[in-house]
Image 1 (cartoon, rainbow, N blue to C red):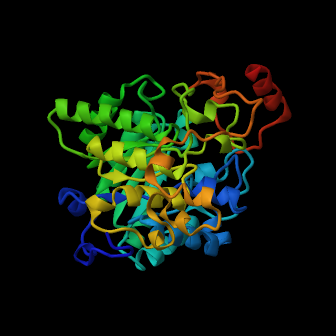
Image 2: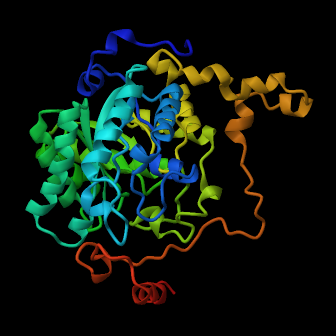
Image 3: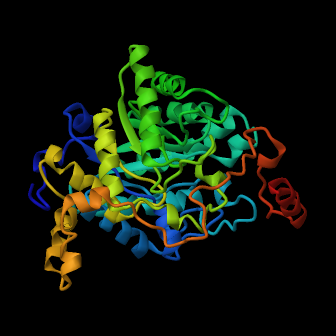
Length: 402
């Protein structure tokens, strides 16, 4: 494997041509969490105004993922619908159209620096949670889709959907473009928030027009791989065809319920002890590949070094390593240059593969007790509003959480 070697013949190929040819596609990581930690995104609304306010920060993160091995630059348009941008007191500084256009330009600029495609993304909406009609929800997706058509993205992703019904509506809108459509639900093995099993979810999405199906966010890599395997089995049993993708959390979530990591008491500001190591990512990439998944990326918690680990594990299959591997010896080989002999002794694969990392927190439990609110679309507590959350509402939520 040669660091930085590009498959120049694939530069003109789209996502389906690459997947049809058996190419491995490496996705990027979690922009909202990464940029929140860097001071450019506000936790709570998790909206992407940074595409306009701080374009250099967004551009740099794209570049770091590209250098780490990503060959899809996903537009930073998560929660970039107008109803989310002005939800619960969030000030509408820029319109959704302005943010989506800026995000498309940044993604395309960086994608053109390497062998990367641009994916325009939509995600679940407050309008759906508030029981707005199918027509109203689809109109929100169409506003984003119109920008993606204008900017001529390479393909479309409907991501982060807790309910297969809303994801199906998104797919039905996006397929009108004639561009390839991928869709990922943020579900685990128990299925969506209405209890629809992963296999049935996948069949519905393929029948709606999605060519690539899978999961993203809410659960750790191996849980997500397990869920995609269930989706794959359902699609094959229905005698349908699809490609499969997975973009999980970079956090260990063995104690999560069907709602995933947002039910954990550590969400979102104390999740760091759960972060997967780069060596965990090697295992994830291999398991995803063995499961027949060929679009492998990451979501919240994924940093460029995590994606580099995925690309390095799959280097033999891809035939090359990412440019960032120039500064990373395989399995710690660079430690052979360290001044201390006991550190040099760690420059080997078996050491890192068998290490059980300590947390350094002797008084902390290994797992948590999730909140288990169990509410979903239609419940009073999930009805959204433009006004800021009131103190009375906060008191109500606090009493329910105890």
